[in-house]
Length: 244
Image (cartoon, rainbow, N blue to C red; front, side, top):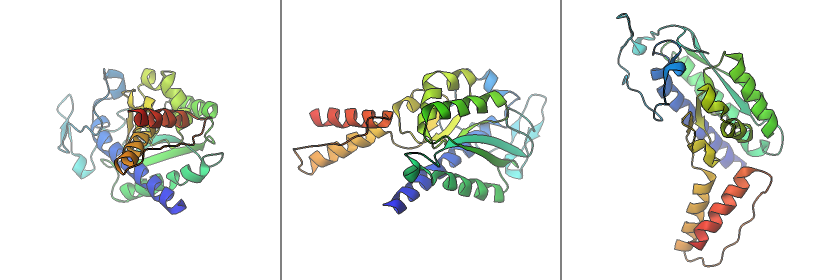
């Protein structure tokens, strides 16, 4: 069971970094202060340059394939690195199934960096353990944004603080990308600055109930956790699917 959780965590964190690379190929080769001129966020995985050399105003061309870039084009971006932040769960009630996510993120970031980085820039990630505490997590995210030295959140394994930052409008107002989130809660799918890469809890519960019915089950039961949002969302989705 533990090995399965670890593998799943590594898989979705890896997917998050892959999406980050695709997006950064667009974001960081654009004009300076990109997030201040975008009216809306691009579609997940969008890469209008197609990996081709990108021309900026003034006629200067940079070829990402050759490790070229336009220097400090945005907050958290320099000619040599792209700085991300993330809140993790290395303590508290969810550490048994979320702690390993950090190591998956580091493994993929290190692999990318050894291969030359993103357009010559190395990926750097600062982690802070919030213990899956909503208030602590949101406070850390507010601090990351206020520091003006991070491009965005990478994966951000701790969903509770992220929920507060999304629901309060902080992420949207700040234009602060959250790339490769776990998709655990529905609100991640409503904010245009959040790119989740995993199936939401509600969708998983729909699938479970529908699959059980298809295999002949006609009596259902569910045990759920009531202190955190994913428990209620999962319960409501499961019950709703059974009633249908």
